[in-house]
Image (cartoon, rainbow, N blue to C red; front, top):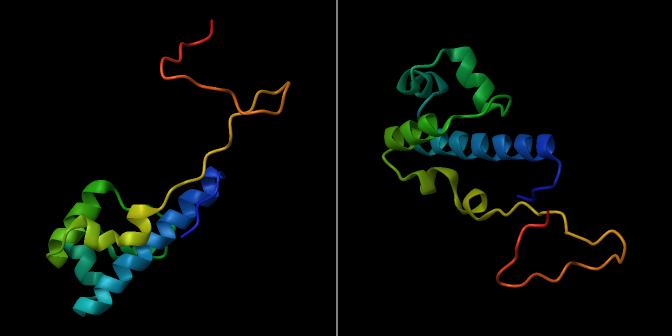
Length: 110
């Protein structure tokens, strides 16, 4: 999974990746979407939106999902999601085009 600096695009990619992992676990354990909805106390329409990546799972829902599958949260999410790093824009000095030199005791500028 490659993340970008675009917040909305990154959010969507993360939602889709999480949903794919959960759908995978549903298949592995031979459970239905209705079963997961019941485990999370959600309606069928809500779980469909979450599994399609249209809505995010809350942290609490992810923990409950992992518990329902009797796995860890790390197993539920998978290594790709856990190890993904969102690239950050480089900090450049506008005048020189160079990256600023930071020391170990950087002080805020006033």
